[in-house]
Length: 222
Image (tube, rainbow, N blue to C red; front, side, top):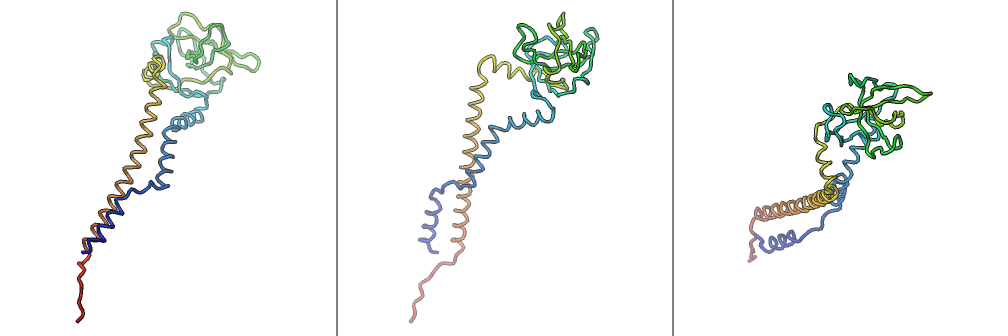
């Protein structure tokens, strides 16, 4: 066996190879998906549910006992004419999500989740009277159709408490930064480890090839 050739080959294979352009592109794509994937999913829900806010989190107990603080709700945009009317006593109207800013003094910045207890048409515009199931009185002013974000179509109980806690404690942004950094490090590490494994396989193949070669002999011609 030509040990010099085997040694030289192994030494060459052991030299660190730069990460290929293909691997770099894959890493960049994966990092972009990690960062922007949630935004793409949210945008998809906006299109599918026909509303600017397809997911909302309840931040008060005004809809107890049917909807709890911390519930995550799914919202669908609906033609105002098709929103179901109801009464405060029977609580059989649709639950809608609406932007109350400007409708009355002191209205919250966050969207409100309340039930429709009356609706009427003024000209070409629908107006809705709303009330929280746990509130004694209806809301301070009727809600015009252009303030309605959508109708609640379902939800997941209490899962929104995670966001509420992180937002109120000021930990949401730092936690997102830490998770994003760990994700980027993990992706880069996986790419580098993949290169090392490929290099090791090549070393093993070359070593196996040279070991199978018949030994060379020096023939003397008389």
